[in-house]
Image (cartoon, rainbow, N blue to C red; front, side, top):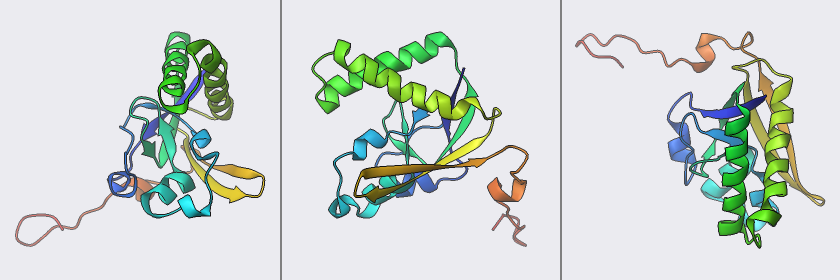
Length: 164
């Protein structure tokens, strides 16, 4: 089975999200967080989280890129339980029994999204508000399509001995 982990290509997530996800934590779309949002909610860092933030499942912070990787059944089940607990604590689910199927559905949706992609494939999410609610679309950047120039920060030597 495959799922996705948060990945940072630079430090920008620390500046654009209120609570950035940590590198390496498992992530899902997390679009449920925006289910009752209106245009009035789309301002500043909240707008950025809405527009293209994946949800980290440890920090419940946001991240711009995730990478597809393998997950064990035990890890997956642990995430289901953790997300169900989050739904009870923060989203008003009445109990773990009621929240577990919803948490499993969220994680299975992400696993389905990742299933057809090679490991190390990068994914981005884009959201927009429509009259029917939140619409999500995904961009896939396969490992062979990525060039080092897309992800590397290049420095030029400074004549004084440092880098610029």
